[in-house]
Amino acid sequence: MSVSLKHRGLPSGIGKFDLLTVFEQVAKSEYRLSRTAVTLLRQYILGTMADDYQQGRICAVWKQVSRIARAISVTPRSINSAERELEDAGFVVRTTGANGARNGERYQGVVRWAAGINLAPLIERFEEMSAKLEARRLSQIAIDQCRSEIRYISRSIRDSGDVKRREQADTILPSGRTCRINSLQRLETIKEDLIAIVEAIDDTSGVTKTSDASEQNSSPNIQDQKSEKTCRAGPDRKATKISLRAVFDIASPDYRSLIQTLGSMDASNLVEASGMACHWLGISQNIWRNACHELGRERAALCVIIIDRNTRLDEHHCFRVREPGKCLSGMIRMSRNEGFDPHNLFRACQGQKNEIPSVETELMTCLLSKKTEGVSVFSQCMESIIDNLSVSEVASN
Image: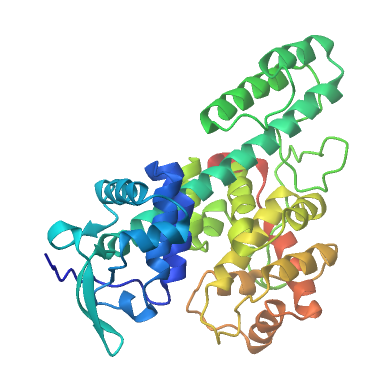
């Protein structure tokens, strides 16, 4: 029997090798497919042409089972079993003729008809497989972040010198290692139990607090009083404070979604989300750690938010960030400079329609390019903005 199963095509810019890559990464973990089934489908995809994946085309193969079996070194019976497995999982449709006969016709590169294995279902499920792959990636990022926090909290408990609390921590995490724990829920439980121990320690180390000061081996200094520093647009203008909500409003849609998955909008989640965002921006964890160390965790988080936002601008936009890692590294190097007013630059990031003075526009163009001078100015902006995010403001937002 011959069936013309046409499909809607792959998304723009996606080819058959992209489809194969995504399928192979989720086939075993998400769909429990056997190794033979995965190898067989790879063989089928390699046997198609790139144009077969265009909208309205037929994407099918009709190579004989015996020849496929020889190509991948299995028996014809294994091929039949693997095809049934793929069909039951909804990735292929078998349209063979009588007695399993396979045949087809390709005219000027286009499949006119085919009696064999049709890959239309696989093509139609590309977005589904991509979503599963992305969810798994984000889950792994969250697991890595939680492990990192557990290590930090455990080290704080050891440094406190409280023997009793350290014994309690050893009871919660006997080996002191989390590398073999892959459950995010279990890791979160361990973290919460360790935080409870830290809060019970009668010490002024401030382990669970965050600070804008540089984080070294000692505990950070916490600003317990509301800062009187303000972000001023000029000597004759009224001081303007930047809230966490204003910072959140300039974030990209992906970043906002990430914050929502973490829970409430607060400083700690802002830092955690920025650490995760470094993965998709291509910013190494070494650079991110250096940023937290030199700028403070909240400053570093805000830098990542604005870098992420500006990487998504139009290719020819003057504010577009092209090398996020170098941009953040430049901010780290020049973070100690002072004396520049960031109000108009931050307003530009918010996308306000108010006219920005020409000198500010030129400066914004420079600071988001590869130029070191621009990075210097940008880092100054970040320090002034974060100075207005006091502990009391974090709690209120």
